[in-house]
Amino acid sequence: MSQPKAQFVCDVMNQNFRIIDGLVTVKDAVELMRRTQAQVLIVEKRDAQDEYGIVLLSDIAKKVLARNLSPERVNLYEIMSKPALTIKAQMQIRFCARLFDKFGLTLAPVVNKEDEIIGVINYDDLVLSGLSNL
Image (cartoon, rainbow, N blue to C red):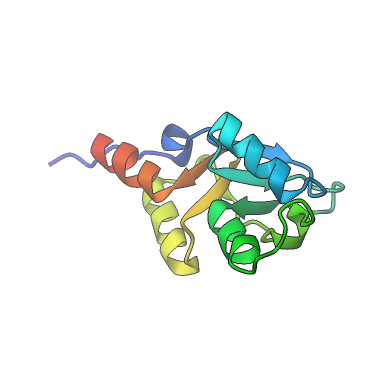
């Protein structure tokens, strides 16, 4: 019996993200997400020694909507998760699934060898695109 073909994160990742400045308000960020159909916002690094931040719709719901805060007065840097745990583009999808399980992730940015974000990966991508191609 032949071994299943190794599939990598870069083969199944998606482009439903936007890179954005942390000073943008939640209101403006939600409008950007709606307009571009992005499912996640990656908050830019401030300098070379900084790390990426990440904001999901669930963060906005829990940290702004549920607390009855004004989206016009809250900046992304106030609600982002930082540092964002990133996934290497050449990681095998089975190891990515294990990493998600171990750290309780549902979505993560994908980086190339230069540590630049080139996509995002989530369970939908892993299962619907990854598993179905094995």
